[in-house]
Image 1 (cartoon, rainbow, N blue to C red):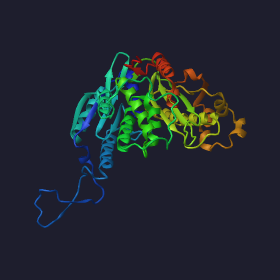
Image 2 (image 1 turned 120 degrees about the horizontal axis):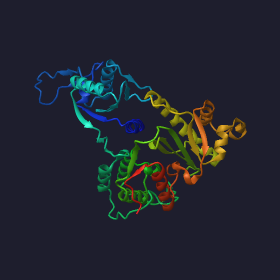
Image 3 (image 1 turned 90 degrees about the horizontal axis):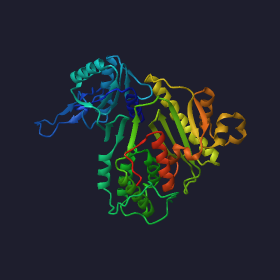
Length: 421
């Protein structure tokens, strides 16, 4: 999804059209390189009980998706396209091609080459040309003078139609302020499948709803044995979703494609394991292209260490995104700015004399320091009140959530069709 949002953001900035293709019976085009046998289909006269040796892949075979992808890859390479080393589903030439199962997105400034490619793919595979991109993987794509909006309104309504709550009184935050859910607190919920299903559906919603990333991360910790407080928190999030069903992100068409990152953490946030939460977001120009909220894998001994680990995760994502943008021939000014609201963590990353204080930190966390020394990343301090990554690290108050969304809407135009009232 990061690659998809990145390419759409580039297309919006450069005013390129995005075309969508659908391949008919995609998995049936794959060539099999192993001997695969199957029983004769029902209805076929087979008195001697013979079995079939397959020459092409079928739906249901474990090899089907891999062989279809190999077939498409070989065709695109034969047309002069190169496969990205940073995302194997991306192919580049005079146009950008992104493949997701049997759906294909094409964008670029070579309209003649795109038309020729469509004709070639139709001749080889038989495709449906769905025209300009409007609906993809459950995501609604809208076009405005400001850019391209991504929402999941239809999916949100379907999600809410399956929830077992009568009272959809709106809430102004995804979770109650400073909520700390415990693993063993409360009675076991009688229908754990319902809890798992709803959290799974909400996880898909985070593709266009970055404000729900922390909520889904928090609720996902209790999938094995959901309890009454966990379900209450889930219903609180569903009421928030009901109040903001048209919300999404706007990939802006104006401004330079400058990459910057924000990272934050909540030290010892988990009351069960005392692990901290990492949150970060990457902005391409004024468009959010990738974000994450994740509990850290180890316990941090200080808030500085927790912030340092969050910076390491953000630095890894920045490194990958820079490589991807270089393949897409998008010029990126280096160093990339990484914003953090903890001066101690910034000093640790900048200055190796703090080695005595960081002996207990694993080597992989010093990845940030390496990237600073390479000149890829520049660390800057900003106050917590201006920290965009804050909502990926903790559940704040209604006032903080409101102010944070106003900050984003005012400076970065992330939130679309959002009404806090």
